[in-house]
Length: 203
Length: 203
Image 1: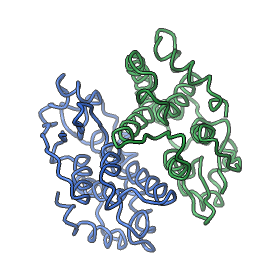
Image 2 (image 1 turned 135 degrees about the vertical axis):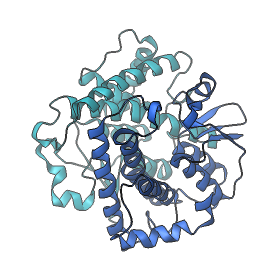
Image 3 (image 1 turned 90 degrees about the vertical axis):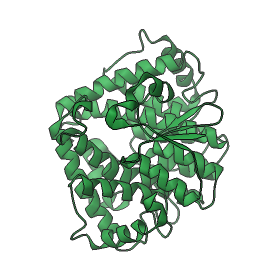
Image 4 (image 1 turned 180 degrees about the horizontal axis):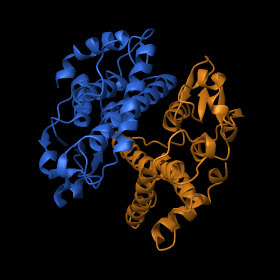
């Protein structure tokens, strides 16, 4: 088993953090996206989507996408559960994971790739207006979460879950991309401080 | 339990099809999106995302998002499995579900909402260039799937799964929106004929 990833980027961090919470160690190989290594024929043979992270299983098959890779480890290493246990918990975690993935992770990276120089010559298509729409969406999602977290410990309820991982990676990228800060969002800041203090947040 | 949905739309169809495959019946209530019923305060109190479908559980909580709702029924009614059984199967189904969701369902509906009149006055923001980029993406995904299906019975492998449901709903919407046809895509057409012949496809 091997995890293809790129340490500086926000999506690979989601999987590293998930693995750290599970206490699972997987050998990694860096794919230097800044040097275009994700677009080589050798890498696209593993993952036609040309994205990191990508997990190589021992039978030689490949899994790409953060949630799909996380799903593998949730099933193979169920404890601690990070994707819910009862049917309702599983559904609520899935719902919140997707909401923060769309509203924070995808929105903030879309802003970065479309409305800033992004990765420079590696950007194949940019649409500034779409980027700015996603700037707006990121901020709106952060405000929504601030209201939600007035009454909840974690994004999906009482328990830490993959939704918190996706959210903290998305928010840290939004801060890096200078979309927003946590000023004036006290509940989100309280949650961010708590999640950032976990050992997994440094993985 | 109640499912809020809107029969003419492609995302609610995904959940109806999933339930039909499971043999589970859930009372439904129509939310007429064409008349803006998804944006009423009463509906947004249930689902702040203002989307259909949305599942009301017996404890009064709400689940929105097709995959999250499907996850509830996969856990509550495991047989037949539609989201994989072994860790590798679960991951592969999750990966393909997300690929076809992004590349077909989200791409074709984004084209429709951004580069056509879409839902008319209900469209709050349109970006024609982004719509056309998603037109291109839908066609590229269909070509990729045609190549994949030369060697596979279903999208995620030997077994019918949620990935086939998402894909057929996305492709039927792409055909409705006149983005593409199945001409010159013989493997995709073979698969589409088989999936469309299932009782669940008429749900």
